[in-house]
Image (cartoon, rainbow, N blue to C red; front, side):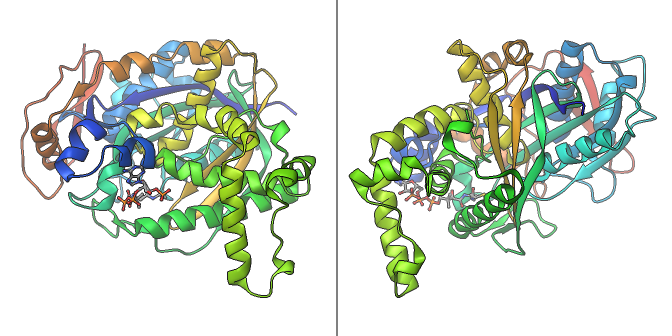
Length: 445
Ligand code: COA
């Protein structure tokens, strides 16, 4: 069977930066370590006044197409995943195609376009759609452009304000991919939950503490479902585990649970038992509370073992390096985590061809999905071609006043015009409104 997966990936960050420990925490009267140590964040990316989900998506896609030498006729689908859409009918992918058509001779008239919505998991669902379309043989030799783009802004004063972010990830899904092959096997954990939603409103209604619990519960279900089709996962089988990263502290919690799960009934559990005992089993306890207390005790002890720490440092920590600098990109976040891990490995000169990633996506509302990816032999060239470090370094570092202004400028309920903080160059920009309320864009040389 021909391999199908991600052939290329590009990241586009919002052009502004908010320093969380340096600028945000002092204004909130909070300890900067809540950000650096607790949430695991040092900065968030923000869109400048001329940026939005369309410009970031089109800019990521344009970079990707240029780098891979792709023309519009090579693309048979454009799917945009977002939870920041501004139109209930016309999909963001049509705007993105419109932008790209201004800089290419060809057009996307024979490409199927759509928009995927399921909170942060929609980007991964779009990968699925592309995979299935190619596997079904309906792609006519073409690939799919999948773009995850979001401006993850919360209402001022909401607890989520600490975990904002803005950026886009564009991926080209094709046969014989250069970066990773996607596994046919996947597992789901899905339930009707009310942890985070936007009922026809721009900023989310969020029960932050509950969303953390729901993330963990659905992820665990997805892992069990994945193992029921792919067999048990063992730590030795995985080089990295990129998870959805609303903030790195969330992944720290998920990683502990995952490690406990994948080491149960293995030689690793036996070896750890000498130091911290075996994992508690529910059947050994009279009440749920007693079992839960024992679990908490085991997890606290596990966290302190050198064995767990080594696994975390090798398998999880490298997935978080970019997220620490950009915050939550919602649909793009798990795809940023994959890039972080591969980029760290490239910088360390590692050979990863043939190694496996275990990818855990999550969307509030709620659904988790787990699948595996096999790293392909073109991965080094693909990751080396990214200019994400340069993009991050070039962001304009906002003062508190700048931040307040730009948050208002992006608030759909406010009519605020703000001078741009950065000067756009070789990118698509927002260019005002059309007569039917549509957004207009242009390319700036
Ligand atoms: N030094 C070190 N750690 C500190 C600290 C300090 N000075 N102050 C706080 N912390 C830790 C807390 O202990 C906590 O870690 P823990 O959960 O492991 O205990 C973490 O930093 C966050 O602090 P907390 O007081 O819980 O923050 P909060 O009340 O602002 O809420 C969220 C945090 C995540 C709930 C909130 O940002 C939110 O609602 N985010 C949006 C929803 C979201 O992203 N959900 C994730 C699932 S998709």
